[in-house]
Amino acid sequence: MLNILLLGSGGREHAFARSLSMSPRCTKLFIAPGNAGTSRHGTNVNLSPNDFPGLKSFVLEQSIGLVVVGPEDPLVNGVTDFFSEDPQLRHIPVIGPSRAGAQLEGSKDFSKAFMKRNGIPTAAYATFTYSKLEEGYRFLETLKPPYVLKADGLAAGKGVLILEELEEAKQELKAMLGDGKFGKAGEKVVIEEFLKGIEVSFFVLTDGVHYKILPEAKDYKRIGEGDKGLNTGGMGAVSPVPFVDAAFVQKLEERIVKPTVQGLRNAQIPYCGFIFIGLMNVAGEPYVIEYNCRMGDPETEAVLPRIKTDFVELMQAVAEQKLDQIRLETDPRIAATVVMVSGGYPGNYEKGYEVTHLDRAGDTLVFHAGTTLSEGKTVTSGGRVLALTSLADTLEEALAASYAAAKAIQYDYAYYRKDIGRDLMLMDK
Ligand code: AMP
Ligand code: GLY
Image (cartoon, rainbow, N blue to C red):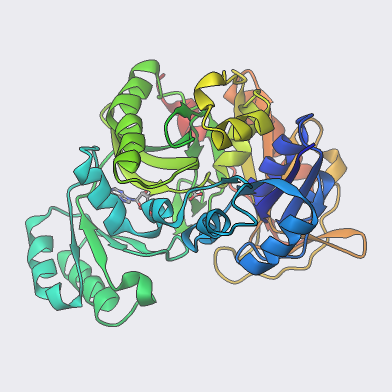
């Protein structure tokens, strides 16, 4: 008997809820706080993932035997340490790194220093605080445009600026360090060399000693077609990615995955969970753009449906540090995910619109992101509303099925990009 608590409320968590609930090992699944979609796979609990005392009471009341953490903020806030330091909770495994491990995402300066120390390929960089503003200007002058400025801390995905002009880069550096443009997150700024290439998201699951490389995905971050306009949490995903071949994965494993897991061990940083490696493929060579201490969203909605291994077994192997004993089985088909959002997102948007025709999605998996149940109806409650995933033998077929579902599902002011995966279809394999 195993009762599981999953933390989070997005499309990623709906995909986790589906995979966990499909396992015969899962007795009861609870999702805190969940959304209208997760409630189909378990019981939503009205608790914030950051309310640690609330989680403690709930976990003890419901005899929870495994906690899976979706988003980064409870990890950066130390939910894993909270469990491991509490005598009543210590025996309950949490899938998600310690606060120290979550710094791979929580601090750009930490993650860059970690990469440098462990010889992991990444863009050249330097870190500056307000007292070193002038040195920051001098460093910018040594770089070629475009200039990449990154707020050190978590800034809801908005803390990275890419600027064409040197003067503009200097002004922005001053705005971040001197005028608090990103608040505390911008008190330190990482300036780095611009890497030219194609991005791909890799996911590693580790028990702290062993690891598995999960299927990769390509994410579509901008709101507009042709990758134009504002950055969003992600407008679509495709997995696998055609330009990722065995030679590229081998480079990734040798140069990045092994030194990352070993580097965490050497630093005695406990890490049981997912490492999301944002990579740039620069002429066939992998460079780390960023680490995240969690799975990606919407990449999870494309990746998890391709994992055939019992997902609870996989999580238990992580908890027991036996990941080497698991065979990771994946579905060779292609997953294409199209995200439906609320018109206006990532800026201001209205919510509370009823979502209808959810039953017309055919075989497409409908993952809920920003939805809630209101008087028995599913209504929009966020910017990203649904993630629609289809699996097929070709990318064309998978995309066609996801787009057919997007067309069928209705709510006011729905928007989605029509060009997800198009770049991959055009690309020579
Ligand atoms: P990050 O939050 O670090 O992933 O940065 C956000 C986005 O900025 C990335 O997904 C890349 O598209 C872009 N980016 C970040 N760092 C670099 C870099 N050094 N060179 C080129 N693009 C970058
Ligand atoms: N899709 C990018 C992220 O989850 O950060």
